[in-house]
Length: 93
Image 1 (cartoon, helix red, strand yellow):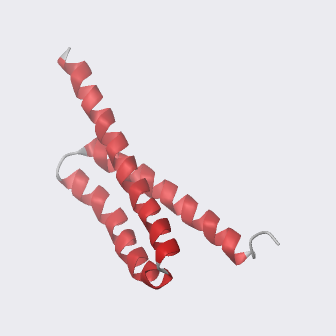
Image 2 (tube, helix red, strand yellow):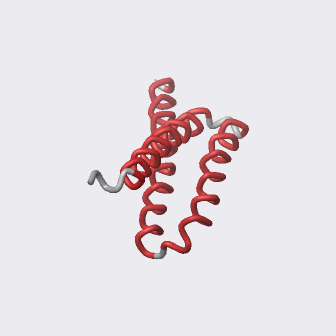
């Protein structure tokens, strides 16, 4: 029974890590729409945070949180590159 409880907690940490990473992405999109001048400093801070969060999670022993943050980092990379590709190609036109 305690093993099942530990599994539920680890899945919660996994989703928490993914949620934190995607929250950073959504905050970046919001920053881009509200004030474009603040986007590049935010992008630098967000990139550092997306790299530091998994490292700190693994060091503190929260393996699933770190794995979730790495999954979220991968999703962020895919989303950033896809959006940049759309912008650089002239919005498909």
